[in-house]
Length: 195
Image 1 (cartoon, rainbow, N blue to C red):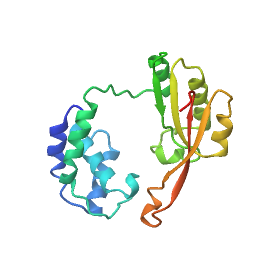
Image 2: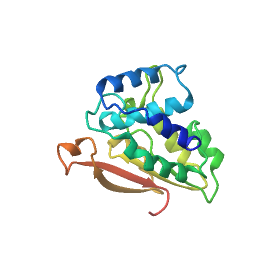
Image 3: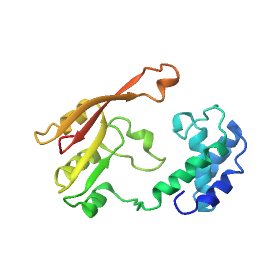
Image 4: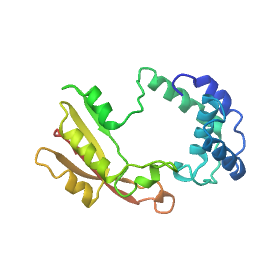
């Protein structure tokens, strides 16, 4: 979306079907990293996100999706990403690399006890040791951090430190929202500065 915006939009123009069969076909294509160009794979991934239930990538959402109606969103994403550096590294290495007194890190790790939602088949997912490693990394930085987590006893214990600020909040539970519009999900906002 950042560098090949128009090519991705052109490729998405071929995604006219909104069907379970097409969704399953594209998901299978994505399972093989040798199939397709980077632009095709980006378009397929976007199609699967748009057509999956709760953007979980696993099951067809069966809601009508006009792919062309999302093209302005893609162009907007391109403009917002124009001056952004995209990194794909372990968080500890990345935080150490960019840490300065003026740095602000926003971290949104996989929520505790939901890590398997983010795990690809055959890959090691985010572990409890990674949650501890994230905390230890953040506690050593020169800059500031803002961290969002699920409200969970493990997380509360992990960040029960006198120099931290923990704010309880809620957000709409987007998955349950279809069935219960007022469904809320408890979250914690944790920082090393007074928010």
